[in-house]
Image (cartoon, rainbow, N blue to C red; front, top):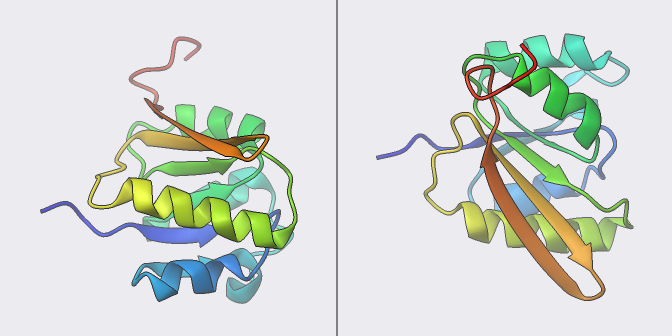
Length: 133
C-alpha cells in the first residue's frame, strides 16, 4: 500500500485549495496557515523535506530546480497556469483524481490548461535523474 500524500499548498496559490484536498480526505495545509509565508524557497524546501510534504505550487522553475537537488522527496505538483482561485480549485480536483493511489516519491505532476482542456504530465525529478548535478 502506498503512503498517503500530505499536501503543502504554496503561497502563490489560494488558501481555498486546502478545503478541496481535505474534502477528498487528503491531509493538506497552506503555507500561510503554518506560519511559513515569506520563507525563501530553499527555506521552505527544508520544511518540505523534514515534514514529508508534497508541494503544490505555481512556481515551477524554482521548485523544479530545488527538487532536482533532492535524492529522495515526497513529490511535487505544479499548477502551470496563473489562474483565478475557482480555476485553481478545479485543476487541483483534476490532479487529485489523477493521483489516486499513486506513490509520488521522486515524481512531479504538472497540470496545464489549454483553452478549456487540462493536460497532466508526470515525470521523475530527483538528483539521481538530474543531469546538471
